[in-house]
Length: 436
Image (cartoon, rainbow, N blue to C red; front, top):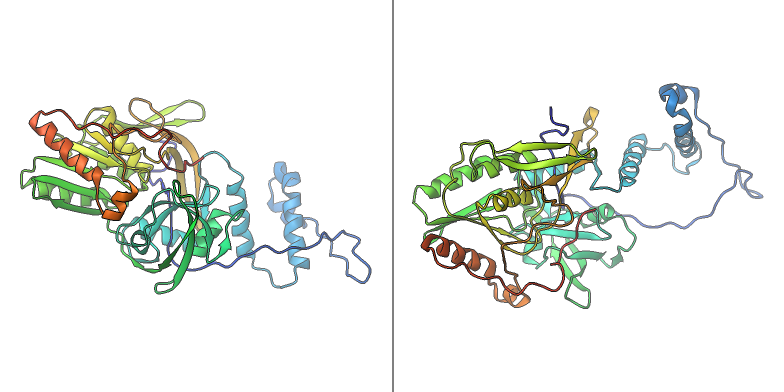
């Protein structure tokens, strides 16, 4: 049996801005010694109670003694009683996950889990509509959802949110920052953005709204090229993608463009299934490499409807995780040319495990992903075969030179003409914020 669960949540993966709001701050105080101060009551002592010791495995009783002492001190001395035990428990899990430094390790409480599932599986939710990275120094945009308030406001992959409603986010945990961005539709939030290539941070005011996250968008273009955009690797991504491809194949298109730009990932099993649309059966799609060096392989399933049609794949700095698995496999086998910019570099594997009694879920990093040629994805990303960036002038003029290059490449493949050349490569690594 594989070491990881089939439902592996990437989320760059991927945390999604959805419902609610969070208010926090920093409170300065003083150190209160056990002996107290004149005129001030001494704190009640608090060692582990016998039942707490009994509930702790014998080999961990010394390790957990300070935890139970702190737990009891809060219950006996905190100014506002009664204390919320569930909130303390969830805070303890959050703190535990934050101590793990390799990969992305996280805890979703029940509400956050519901929000994440809604965004990943194409359900409606309220927010600004952006996939974000909570593992960097600041909350960082992985990709805005097409047509969302974040997209219309001009947020881009790699944008760092350094202040929210005028409150500096320096030193604030990015997950707390994410919570501050949350809010119901119709309310406004002002984000201060730090963007590579822009010297001065700038404010963006966004009105939150109800967000609909379709998994697949597609069209048969007038030039005879089939175009399909996969937004995220949710539960039904493979079914919706196959339906779209088969509908367009019935019109005998010249070739197919698979657009994985700003796709922050999703479920591993969906990545395997999507890659299987374009590859013969039993081709290795991705390896998982564990700490002891062991490799687990995932192979294509067969039965793909687009194994032979000329294919190009669009990627950019917002293409992460499952997107990189699919694109990397198609590139390694020479099945498709990759066009765009360097991908995100999210190649660590999280086992997503539901906790008992509906108390949320944890994601624990267990391995790294390698392409079929055993290239590492994590922190490096994928280099496109044809490098094409979208410039500031392109954004302003609403041009899409990457899509134009994809069309030119497909037409050249079909006609046997020379392929388009890359733009000049950047002097530094293209903008993206790698996960640890």
